[in-house]
Length: 591
Image (cartoon, rainbow, N blue to C red; front, side):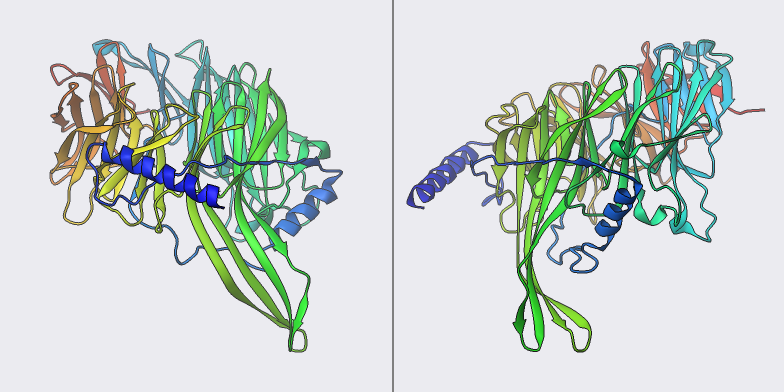
């Protein structure tokens, strides 16, 4: 104990020395880092189901685990405070390009346009069937192929809990851009969690609630290939340890060449986040590891003492020639702060978790047939864990955020960006450039209640800040050339404008680091505009607010061959970004 006290004291002194040398800092910054043993638990064996009955029994037990004893719920001292978001890149957006053509999804189908400057034209419009109510739309391109992914539901309102959502995959042959051809239609049970393209294979992760399982019949997950039912075999369904919810996660792979299902497997629990690296999918979920004491008497009650600890379970699924293999995993301390607090970059997995340990007692009065629960203790903390692609821990930061904790953590570039529940005025950064020795750096201006971050080239990070009361929207550029000393390079107040789309809408913010162009649909007192801003390496400068005829909130910007294409479902505008002039307009109107 004496040795540990000395080590902690030395570590804290070193940290204070580092912070004292950083740039813009708040006095008494609440963040501090402590080096410690980087622990993770083995995942353990996930056993394949013996038959459909074992799957049903596992899901039923998961549905009753906490409902019958204790529901963690949302604690009263939840880490509130200013938020961070991750501006998603355009991959898998509703607009994509192959360099010569633009592909766009609207409410009814796929539009293909030639990206030929003033000679641009609509080449084709292909209707795509979406059963029921559709959402979570994604568009992926492969050579001579367009893949459209959409979650659909046929809920009729009478038995919504028994309705089963499905992810529908439509594969089009686009070798002839003027006449795309339907190749295949595939469907996977459940709602969309994530999807990606890996070496000619579309990987889909879905989730289905136990409440939507049929009252009778086979509960094994199902896929459809051109209306032919493909039911998973029991050995393809893995029974999760300590499931925290009654749900089924399905991972399926579909060949882009012909739309055939290559492989599928499932887990008897939900999935909150998915990371992709080369040929590996990493699935994460929060689970509660609960222990119970032997019953004892405190007249007139029978008492059982419980302890419950939140963990993050990571499962690694390898993709090879379309085949899927469960290839290990591990368990980390704490639950992810949210699904976006997990990222894989350059072979390093970064996870921000909140440790949460609680104890409580259940008092049962057998005579009167009721049970009461009483909490006994509750402890929370924050940590940042770095792992290699084999899920070996390489580095660890603990005790982040002081007594009040971290309200949000996001990753951009080689930094982890953090906001704390206590300090609304500051943004903190952790340098992750050396995965074996992550370190806190210092603080920067926090900029608003919510800050959406995204990498903007190798040397800068772009932020779009949502205002607090009495403030305005702002664009911010952070210089991260030296990860150990990030700084705010410039900011621009958007006094007359606010983004028309959500901060996290995939592709809503156009940003091209090569030219410094930044664009998004904006709402002002005079109506909707497409706002362009340019970063010249030193300053942010507002360029133009285009008063185009029709600018919806879901408009997208694409830069091709030196021209900017502002793509909306009704019209596409071809813009010279240097002269800030609209050169041509292409109508997407059908009929």
